[in-house]
Amino acid sequence: MQELLLQEEEKMEQESTGSGSSKFSSLQWVFKVKNMAWEAYKSKPFSHWVLLFLSSLGMLVAFPASSLLSRVYFANGGTSKWIISWVAVAGWPIPALILFPMYLFHGTSPTPLSLQLFCSYVFLGFLSAADNLMYAYAYAYLPASTAALLASSSLAFSALFGFWIVNNKLNASVINAIVIITAAMTIIALDSDSDRYPYVSNNQYIWGFVWDILGSALHGLIFALSEWVFIKFLGRRSFHVVLEQQVMVSSCAFLFTTIGVIINKDFQGMTSEAKTFKGGVTAYNLVLIWSIITFQLGVLGATGILFLASTVMAGVLNAVRVPVTSIAAVILLNDPMSGFKILSLVITFWGFASYIYGTSTGSKLP
Image 1 (cartoon, rainbow, N blue to C red):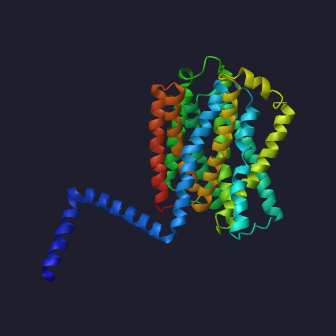
Image 2 (spheres, rainbow, N blue to C red):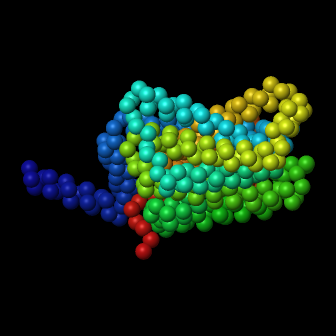
Image 3 (cartoon, helix red, strand yellow):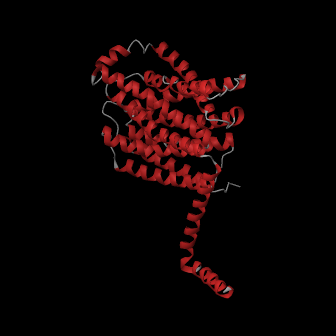
């Protein structure tokens, strides 16, 4: 019997070499990933995976919806970049409404607010306010599909800032993904004439392009710094710290943005803007209200991913929402989709795959 088993093992080894070696290696990799996923699942409680799923859903649904609503605002008569930036943080009471019952009914204690933690919240709030304003300029001048594709560069910035700030892995596959996504952005830049709106000047289109890239860079920095705050000050004790960070950061961003809106006197212009808005005052209010809700749910999802996983996964999901937004913009908003833009989307997918593969392996750069 033992001899028979040995013969069978030798036969399997022989079959795994030669022409069948690549197939066997592929199967090995599939089983390895399957085992890793199962071990990861068993290592966390079920509630962890429920929260991770809901947070991922927030990033993949709420963020694309908020991006499309920003474009709807500008396409139908909205003109204020400060207002759409203010809308992005005006929903800060939403996570507060979820957080306070946790204090009252679950015996959860608020995290002590040290000076360093408070300064971190204020700084992140300022960066968030600046990031929202940059994206507002991008969506004012670019089609939603183009703006979303450019925003995929946040994946590269998340990888770089995550490596420098929180020591996340950076290997050859991740660097390959960064180069590929950069090439995709270059293709869009070379094809700028095919999707520029008639009422947008060449100079405005270029600035929209620049603000989108800068906003993506800042987005990647915010991801890395937010994870650093969890590691340095908050720890990964309970999900309530996610809500605490979002309430504090969003309220600080709301304060900074409100000051900008007041200085720019954009609150006074909302009444006249609503009257001239395509669809009327009701449509104007609905766009702003749903923007407030979707922006905040998207940020809540992203912050949850940073707490439950890492900057890496947040960067991956932030990048995955790019094709979702692009395809939805083409279908719902009739965005132009040229051959070059389709090529850029395909290349971006390639970059995502390389990034996901790189972050799932353990080999770092020497």
